Image (tube, rainbow, N blue to C red; front, side):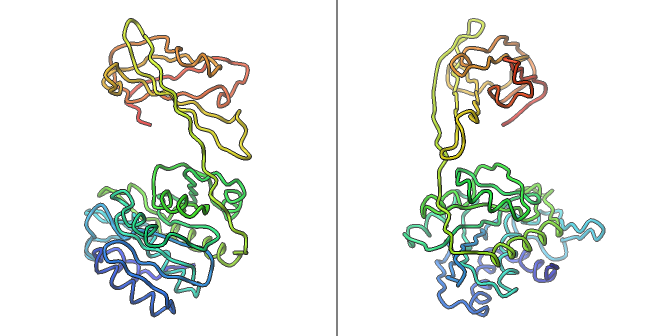
Length: 339
């Protein structure tokens, strides 16, 4: 599909309050009758398709002016030297394009996602129950990404990926609040922006159009099946160890999926701290040897060398090693690495 270019530019250029005001009018004009605008928190409209689609109205940088938005016609990329606010005006616009195509899913526009999801938190308090089959958020950078966060419903993951997306991992979006609150599976899809939260942000029109088309395809094939939120279970273990005469705190994180995932798929992450609990910054671990036994992993830091810089040390157990017969995994360090 081809997006309405001028309408997209208008979405990018409006400030948050003006955009919310105009969205309310457009939603009503599109035929939604049950609409609630909670000023400064969210806009919610109940549709006739049992899917909730959400995006957030707030941006990190101020909205650009039309005169400072530039378009690369060859690559079909938008950018602005002042920042363009694709996170998440791309998602807002995508939802309105879907509505413009005649589809009426439940929709939720939130304020305050960039401040910890304040709008989503207000919404779940005002609406303690919600009757939808699954939730789509349109607030992911890149192209063709699908992020499920702590949702481990394998049936839903397989279903969402079947529309042409690739599973990636992320840290936070509004569905991290909405999905567990309603026990409904959810996914966050790419909407084409990159280098978000900076003046180097740009938007791929091709990627945005592709995601809109895929979501429309999902809505056309929506059935009565409801996908529940099956949460990933995390176990945390803390231990103290001695390396070259120094004490460090090791935070060992073991995450694994419930249900269909086998325990053998566990990954173990190790972050090294000094004895005061601070991350090991301004130093470098030259090599970290890790044996392939979870019980023995805790004390396998073999060599510590000052110099260079590393924020965190992360390793995996042997499930992620190309050679399954090699019981030692080396983490080669160089310049600063952040995980």
